[in-house]
Image (cartoon, rainbow, N blue to C red; front, side, top):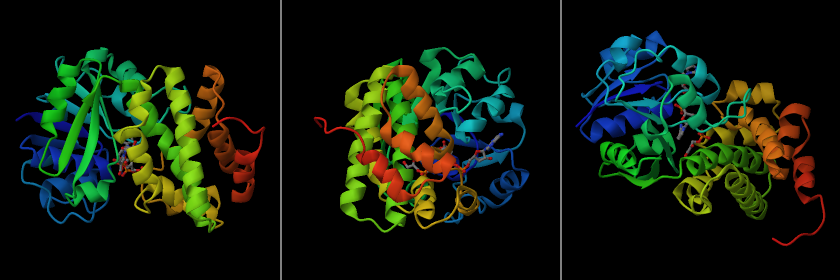
Length: 332
Ligand SMILES: NC(=O)C1=CN([C@@H]2O[C@H](COP(=O)(O)OP(=O)(O)OC[C@H]3O[C@@H](n4cnc5c(N)ncnc54)[C@H](O)[C@@H]3O)[C@@H](O)[C@H]2O)C=CC1
Ligand SMILES: O=C(CO)COP(=O)(O)O
C-alpha cells in the first residue's frame, strides 16, 4: 500500500485515482479548481469531470495545497492537459520528494517544443529517467470508472520501477503490463489521438467501416514509422498502447478526440467543436506537433498533415481523405 498523489482531477485523473484507491492505496487528488477539490473532499464525488461515479472510495481525498498534496507521496501521477503540463509542474519542482516515482497519464506532444510528455515532465521536475513512468493503453475513463475490465501498459527505463507502479494500480478489473519502451508508449498515446480525430471526422461526415478501417490502418503505419524513427520498439505499436488504443479510441463516442472529429465531420467549425468538447481533445494541438516531428525525423506524415489542413485551413472531410489518396501507388 502506498501514498499516491494524482495531479489533475479531470476525467481520467479521477478515474485512475479510483483504480489506485481500489488497489488499496491512500490517494490524494490535487486540482487547480477549488470547486473540484471541495466536491471530492466533502462529497466524495467529482460531479464536474466524472459525474457517472456517485461515490468515490473513502481512501481518496483531495487538496488544493500543492505542498500538502505531494509531501508524503511515494508515487505522483500527472493527469493534466498536455499543453499545460510544463507550466503546472513548474510549481511542484521544489516540492516533490526526492525518491518519488512520477507517472504520466498524458497523451500529447507539446506544441511549442515538439517534445513528448516524458521529456516535458523530466525537464520540468529535473527527474532522472529511472524515476519517470508512462502509462498508456485503451482506457476510456468512463468505462474504467465503471470498473469494466481493462488493461494498460506501464513503462519505465527501470523495469523494477515499472513493476512497482503496475503493482500499485492492479485491481480485479484493471490489468497492467510492463515495458521499458517509454518512447513507444508516448508516441502511441499521442498519435492515436490524431488518428481518432480523422476517423471521427469521416464517421461524422457519414462514411462507413471501410473508410474508418483505412484511416486506422494507415494511421497505425504512420505512427509506427514515426515512433521507430524516434527510437521506439516497433512491437509496442502492435500491443495494447498501439492497436489496442486505436481500436478503443477510434470506435467510441466516449473519446473526446473521436467526438471532436465527428463534430467537424458534421460541419462544426474548430471553434464550435472546441466549445462542444467534454474535456481536452489532445489530438488538436498535437496534430501540428506531429507534422513538425515528422519533418524533423524525415518521416512522411500524410494523415497528420491532412488533419492539420482541416484544423488550420478548414478543408473538408472529402478533401482530407483526398489528400490521403494522393501520391503514387506504393507497396503497403
Ligand atoms: N479521459 C480518458 O479517457 C483518458 C485520458 N488520457 C489522457 O489524460 C490526460 C488528462 O485527461 P483527462 O483527465 O481525461 O482530461 P480533462 O479534460 O477531463 O481534464 C484535464 C485536466 O487538466 C487540468 N489542467 C489544465 N490546465 C491546467 C493547469 N494550468 N494547471 C493545472 N491543471 C490544469 C484540468 O484542471 C483538468 O483537471 C490527457 O492527456 C488525456 O489524453 C489518457 C487515457 C484516458
Ligand atoms: O485515451 C483515451 C482512451 O484510451 C481517451 O481518449 P480521448 O482523450 O479521446 O477521450
